[in-house]
Length: 111
Length: 114
Image (tube, rainbow over all chains, first blue to last red; front, side, top):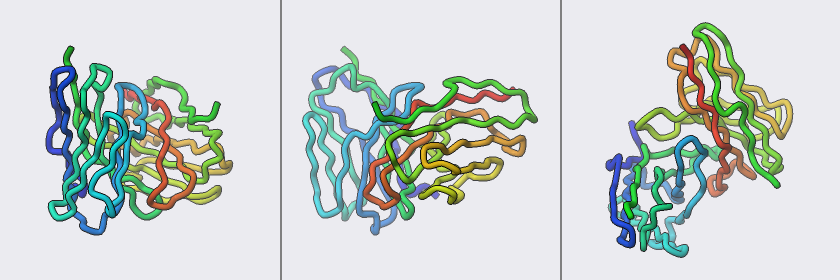
């Protein structure tokens, strides 16, 4: 069963507008969440994280929101740029340092 | 500069042959990981190693083997027992194996088996 879910396989937005990528999880014990960005034929790179003691974490154009009661987190990119076009994965670290990844959402930012 | 190296970038093999994918890191990280990515799916953990000379199976270890004889190196062998070996393979490392440690990924190896 999928413990971390990204239900939107793709998202297309206009340059300058907001991109919102969503992620749902099933286990209320999860207490740390990460977002990774991945370009084709490259490894993912860490983007931003959030601890369950917070409901928001901001880093420049990127903000992650956590709604623990809904077991939902979202990544906001404002303003979106063409260089943001990539696949975005949410992930949860588990015992032993393992990461459980969502399926990913492919973001396309059109000029 | 420090990082994770995976070689080669593209690898082609005939069905029935074993193949070993290389992963080297000079970040002085204790923990290393192997994932595979398939189209439309997230990354799935194959094997991981928290320390030299120790490793554990991940979620999809069948048909794979690893070794961790050196801190810097964590090679993955895809054996002929792996039913669907064609995939994009990613190696990662982290300082430790606690839950708050960020993982750093290599550039990946795309394996095609025909």
